Length: 75
Image: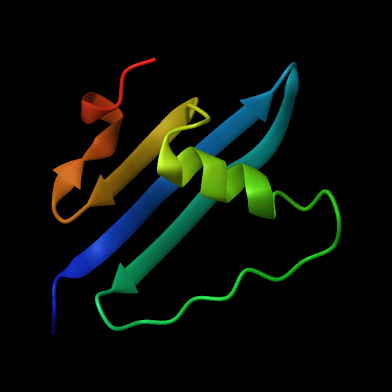
């Protein structure tokens, strides 16, 4: 089995006082194709902005190519 390209482990993201994403887990291998699908306000953009470093996760880990990105990204 190939090592994951991206792993999201128990991700929690807040906006203001509200929790937008809670307990989110995802494993993506290098050749996987992922689709985010959901209604308005479901957290799709928030998830992508958190993975890219625009938002900071309150809890959990973002691991890209084996590196914990929470420790790499500074705000």
